[in-house]
Amino acid sequence: NPITRAEFLSKINPEGLVPALQVNDKVIVEMTGILTYIAALAEEHGRHGWLPSDAIKRAKAYEWISWLSGTIHSQAFTALWRPGKFSDDEAAQAGIQAKAKSTIEGHYERIEARLAAKEASGGKKGHAVGGEFTVVDVLVYLFWRWAKHVDLEKGMPERWPRFAEVARQVERLDGTKVAMEIEKQGLWFS
Image (cartoon, rainbow, N blue to C red):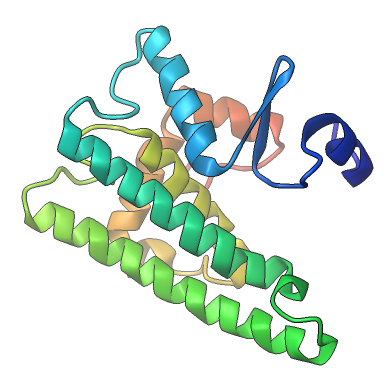
């Protein structure tokens, strides 16, 4: 069940930061912290590769996570959903949201371009880092799903085929199917 903002602030994160993951009596915030924790859990349960062991590939994974969380999430989507963080002038907030939508579209173009460059240098199609699944692919999938918030979902697979392939790979995972069912969200490709 969803909790109220007051419950979130008192029980999970008094700073109000999202995302936040509560693990027993500890709270992990920020995408990098949460994704690193999830990758470590996967490793403990014999699912290797969620963060690559190769130093360059691991650095590339953190590069993606930093850009996706720090630029697309913290700047562009925050401007869309919480324009008051960027201006107290209510009259300016509609303009901030409009700019956020065009900025997000530009970032989606950049995701496609980054995936194309990786493929051109020998990387495997369908994954953001190297040739295997990583936690970065999950984050890329999240932004794929958020396209509906900026009215970009129509024609996305044709417009951004590499981005679509990463999303398609993540959606094939049993865990994704279970999560979407729990959250009462439909699958995009199935």
